[in-house]
Image (cartoon, rainbow, N blue to C red; front, side, top):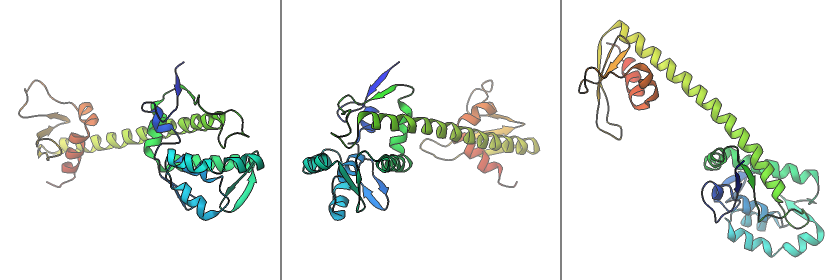
Length: 238
């Protein structure tokens, strides 16, 4: 099985899954510029300082967080919104879950990168394995990404099913109208040149194309430009 090693110096989609990636999201009303910003901010007890660090992206957040490494590691204590808790507490794991979920919901680029990894095993070789040495271990990181990837795939599948049903409904409406009347639809300019299409008894043909090369309704369903235009025109009363 393929293995993807996540890192900010790698290639897409690896880089997009890095905590350094500039994925902006809101967490409990606080603007985070990246997951790295959020994670490093947990080392700061002062709420104002925490908000400042949250807004940082990538290396800038990492550098800022280093100033608090000695203290948090000695005490094994982190903070969020003025509330302190142990690094090993279940409460902290719940907070991490919520933060990754917030980024997942608010950042389509992050979701797309997750889906793009397919079924590959995710790893972060430069990450640490001991919780006492880092605010996010490789295991804590990669297991969450893997779980969110499955959620993203499921959401994509559901979205594609809904889109397919909508397309089918539009095709049915076009066919119904075409059976009732012969209508010549003048297509629109949409990134490309205008197109004139004739619908007659469920068959779509291009007047300027060879007559023996019609575009059937399956082709129309798969072409959003033709489908949307035909559907819009089919709703116009003759």
